[in-house]
Length: 412
View (tube, rainbow, N blue to C red):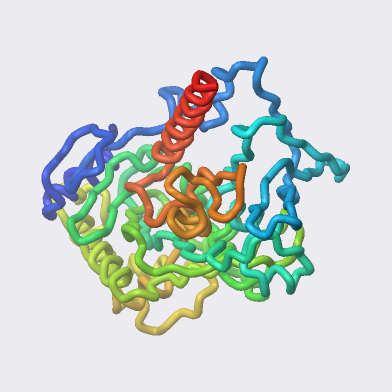
């Protein structure tokens, strides 16, 4: 761990985010150094790498294939019968339609892992959702389940860019401060986040920070204007890094609904950032902690003494990291700054939550042979980053399902 991350770590400790827990995977209050999915050569290793360990005799992987809906069988002559998932309809890259069916056997089932946006969308496209909403899109109702798409959450993230008088290393999020008031403090630095020194890459309009707005507001002219503002900044001012805070939970929730019946189109999602005042208060305290870190002795080598914290807030507000309307007091009020410059850190979850859409075994309530196993089932966000939790959820449920099958086979 090099100079920027070390300064953030020492700054966190100096301002009271204690104790120091060193390197650990544990999620505990204090300051720690977390794990990474990047190796020593800077290569990122995703869950796709796990396919290397798959048994090629028992798995078939279809690339560039998009599932359009899950297929169900129903016995209308039986009043108490439940719909049973028995296959999927999907299209390949050329748009050719295919169908894949489950083998015969009572233990065979379909597992949906399309994420917080994709899984509730796919259930709706397949006829599981609020009946009135499905009928609006001419979708046959398999199960009237109004809780599909509800409980959508996205942890609000706000950040400050700190220009540095001296060069800094390229660093990804490594150090994290887990506060006792419900905010996570993290940091990134270097050229990786100012692409060619010309834009705030991690927070640029080009990679979807505007996607939380209604489609009619995501106009190309506004995006181009925002990019232009960023590119006009002094290049020396782009040598530094971001310190960000992310709200735990969150408590505020929203909903997801279909825009149309095309699975390739994003659904309409409303997260209701800061609808609950407790989320807003956590952001305010988190930004206050960031101000203290920047003013700490540990961080002194990486700040200009003649640039105030309100000037740093102004820099972010003027960079137009989203299309929300700005206010004249954005840089003077942390509450207004949180509201005006809120961004996503892509940790959205909910929509198929345990106890509402799936049971404790992740089986979809009201139908058979169908599970959802991904972040859409979460009722709250696990830790500072969900990757390890999601991978281990898949591992845990995979082993559990296999053991249940083995036990059933031995019984028979």
